[in-house]
Length: 86
Image (cartoon, rainbow, N blue to C red; front, side, top):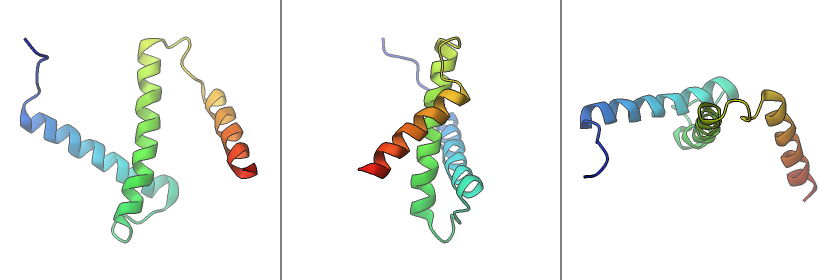
């Protein structure tokens, strides 16, 4: 027997919520107008959504070793410096 499946209605509601979140991240954090630049808003928001989801999974599995805000800030700086110098 396979894994339990969500009803199509609840799956659609979750998917719609994720999409709303993507647009909200792009608009709130970057000032991207989703009406004027829908593809850009979805792409930028999707990156934020992926980061948040990944951090949440790590925290739920092992909160003691999940990255802190300081860890993430340090990592972003290291990556930005590497990208900027290359």
